[in-house]
Length: 294
Image (cartoon, one colour):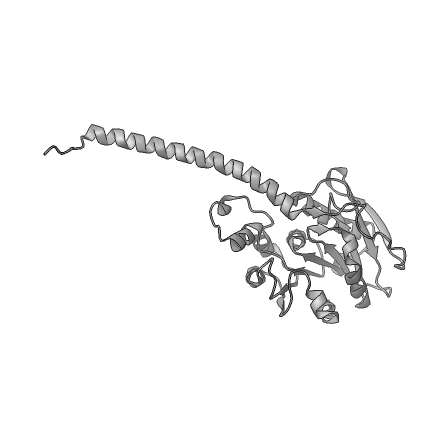
């Protein structure tokens, strides 16, 4: 019976064909990955950045005594808008620099602002580019430079000492707060709530898909950025958060190199609703943590 005996030359041809096939597959994967990056980046932006414009929300703030309507420049001359609410009593009171989440605009937070003021805080809350009355279009890098511009405005225009500033961020705004705190700015403390380790990890945890997610750029990399933060750090997270799993908070705590760090777990808390679940206790916790830092 005839049997095929591979010749050395035949083996070379087969290897050559195999290498060609591998090259075609690699090129296809490379092109596919580029297209995937473009698609995911665009869809990711659409899913993450959900602004309300200046025509949406309740902009009536005149009833708040002493509030200041603030306009200040960010990178490339983009003008940002925010509100400054003074502390009830004069003095070197702590000032909340509020890095919002990616949804809505500053008009969504009146209740929380009043609670912060009750505990003696001043509050500076601003809209990122493309949100509310701020100019421009939303982007991750834009958020980072906008937060630094807000910090500079507090220090240079409002004459707030860095040691008074509490950098506060919620959800993806926590990533912005972490990045700001890691830029060697002077501040009293960092407080973040419901913040994911990174967009990568969040997508992986929510979908169960590892590849090709692991090959995508690192968007909102709170886990790596937090290693650069030395400020006292308070991490708040609801144990029932269905958007960002509680495990993210535990891993952020482990990543932190802060001089003092604490995880405040809210047993019945969901995503960014811990203040609703706890009421005064939520703001008291932040106040007590901040006051431990001279």
